[in-house]
Amino acid sequence: MSKMSTGSVPDSAATTHAPAKPHRRGPLAWFKHPKRAFADLRISTKIASVALVVASVFAAVGVTGLVSIRDLAAQQDYQYRTNVLALSHMTDARSAVGTQLEVVVSHILSEPGFYRNQYEMKIVTTDQRLDTDLVELHKLSLARTEARALDAFESLLKLWRTARDGALAASRSGDRQKATAMLLVESEAVARSVKTRADAVLGQLVESVATGARDSLSSSRDTERLMLLSLVAGAVVAITLSVLAARTLSRPLREAVEVLTAVGRGDFSQRLTVRGNDEVGQLGLELNRTLVTLRDAFAGLKHQAYHDNLTGLANRALLRELLTDAFTRAGPGTHLALLLLDLDGFKQVNDVHGHGVGDQLLIAVADRLRSGLQGPDDTAARLGGDEFAVLLDGFDRPANAYEVADRLLTSISEPLVLPGVELRPRASIGIVLWRGHADIDTLIRDADLAMYEAKAQGKHTVVRFEQMKAMS
Image (cartoon, rainbow, N blue to C red):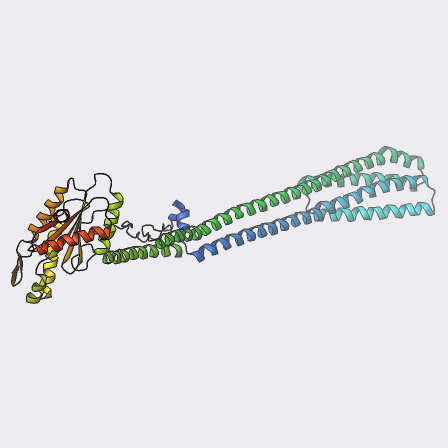
């Protein structure tokens, strides 16, 4: 039991000041304490931040995919416009050279007439094809190595045409043997060189096409990895922000439920932890301030319910609770005593000097009762009017209770000087010891009987109930 001699009431609510309002953090707080800085944001800003991050992730993935698709399309377009077309023209040119070689052989072996004329026309046609293919090849933006190979091919092609024209001239003159010799010695060797060079150019073009395909595939895979990485990173950031935003809502609300549940039980000691300066943080701050106000208000109401308004002493209800508590704690060898005190001639003081002086007298008597108590659990109470009570809890021997009663009687009777009047208060005291068998009502009744016996014996005296009972 807490000490009650000063008229205080035990309060389960600890004195807790509301936390100071957190300050707004500057931009550097985002680098030093990003989690706390995020907690300071408004809830709408947090939700918008999560949505913005998610939208940014999908936008970044979309832009990355679009750029990659455009790059891939550009690479494929370049491959088609350069290497694939070059491959087609070079293949046609090589085929034309091979065709010409066959036509020249047929020209030499044929007689003048229709077939030889057809061979002449075929040679002219394949030459036109060769010229057209070369022109188209020069229009393309070939790589340097491929351009050099094409130049070497053209140089050999000129040699082939020179050797071919010499063989054809010999054939037209009717010198078939010479034409055949020229064809076998010069033209065929040059033709093979032209084909070899054409094959080299074709090989380079094929390798360029293959390299371009591999680069496109690698670019596609890199883009796929980049998009996947962007999605994962964005998902992690979005989930992290979502969890932080959810925690700034769910945790304070859960704590608020716990605090309000405690308030419902009458416990005003719990407080919300203010983690940020957003709406929830401000709500927690104001709720903490409200709890302090409610605690003080309920403490005031409790004090009024258990104390006398005039003197500040415990009232009858608190006295009964303290007696119940003392009975519960009492064990073998425990000494309890109850003193009932009634002022003598108090009605005459009110009638002669007025109720103001009577109230001053009651306040003075209450102060003298407080000053006369020594035990940490002793309590003085005003039961109403000019009737007071004193609970002595935990003295060593019964004689101590009687000594306290005599001392209080002497203290009360000291002169009281008030503005315009001097009073000598007198009182009658009845005292009863608790022997471990009486209930509260019986204890109060016995003390009351002893107090009335004190008044009957001439007032301003102390009567012990045990002594009165022995005499009867």
